[in-house]
Image (cartoon, rainbow, N blue to C red; front, side):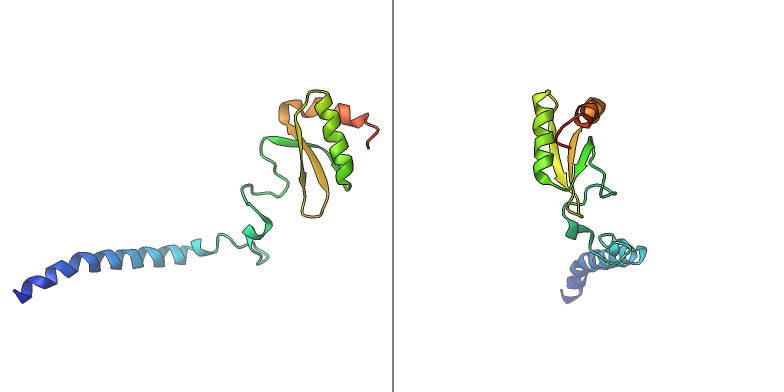
Length: 118
């Protein structure tokens, strides 16, 4: 009866061994450092790191960039009065970008270009 107990341990030992082997392979491949920038900084320290580039806003395009958040709000209101949905985002350097959808970007740029807010 004592000789049959060893067979119950073989399955869990094989599973533990495979998990350790896969962990070592992934660690050796370098997947442990995917959250670290080339400069040594943490990628997630800047906030939600969805996009590869810091100026990539997905479906939105910047139509105006300003240092003053009040000016960005004025531009956003101007675009809203024209029926263009707009939002704003703050860059790492503190500048505020007014963002619209790509299909409305050209009209929004023309509207903002003649704005007294700038």
